[in-house]
Length: 114
Length: 109
Image (cartoon, rainbow over all chains, first blue to last red; front, side, top):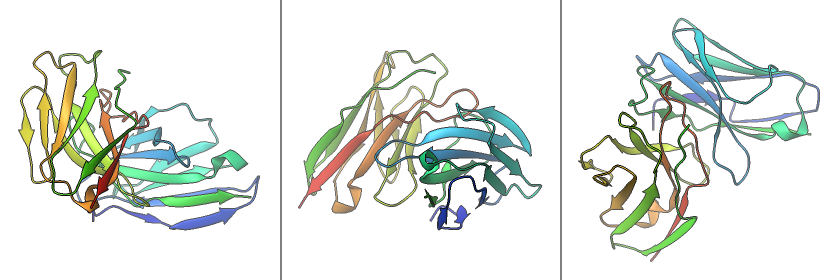
């Protein structure tokens, strides 16, 4: 148990739809990162938020967007879903953006796009 | 972003020590080395991290080479619950984690 929760646990959408995934961070953690993990692969960094501002982005198109709220919970939004967006989406929180801080991952949201 | 290199898979017997190697030859002087593991159907879990000195915690030990170009994660007594994918990572200066394929550890009873 890391204290990081994600919702929903599973989701099925069709191509072209939009989806919102949610992440609640551990108390006091002001930095959240989102990752996409395709089957059989390691997680890939999507973006990171620090105190409600985007603070780094991976190689993902603009239809992947996010928000971080004042309580440091976060959302990942994906527009115009494609079949390749089917994956496990993970969020990870930590108490500050320093690279030395351990990151606490949630259990993930499994997204299936049909 | 500096990459790390790990063997694709390793096997161990239950209750024996396991040494998981990692090469990070392009590491810079201020880069930390982190280890995470991912059990089946779960998110990654932090194991340990270090900079220069060897580190111990309740889960594992981390031995870092003197030149810092490699490190070894040591599980002192492997259990069946330690079967997982182990990732050796060098976070970017903004904390981004770059995951490779990791090492899949099998533990045999």
